[in-house]
Image (cartoon, rainbow, N blue to C red; front, side, top):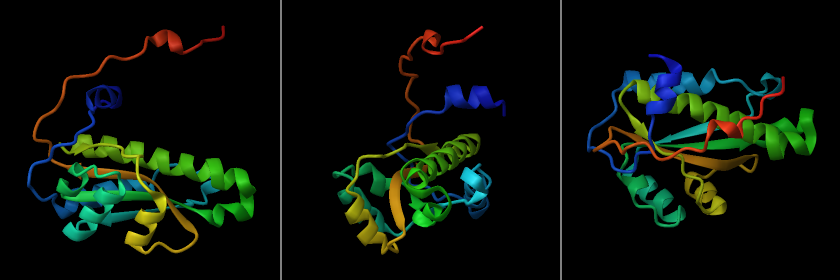
Length: 170
């Protein structure tokens, strides 16, 4: 698949078919997360793959009642790992680790799209509640939730800002 085409075609999906994701496809999603770049190659990130209905419902509740989260067959929770502090201090924790999770998730979303899956990036949730639901150790901090599944429908592309927002110095 052409990468630019995948970027342009990928959509945020909030309605999913009641269809399981094959184990081989889940493995591809895991590989895409693992192989993303990271600051100093510290890989200060962890990803929780949630399939349990009760856990998904609790996560949806902690996500300001965004119930579509619980309807996805898979929910991935991306977490930063404060171990990065040892090398990069506060900037590592407050920026680099978040960038690492973001790079991982974007790559994973493109791999999901390539495999006919839909995803949506959820950032609105109560951190402490998600941490408690997943029983996260103190060094991990959830920063993104991504429901994954086969779309019921694919929305039309939303308007985009002009390419003039990219300032090119010559």
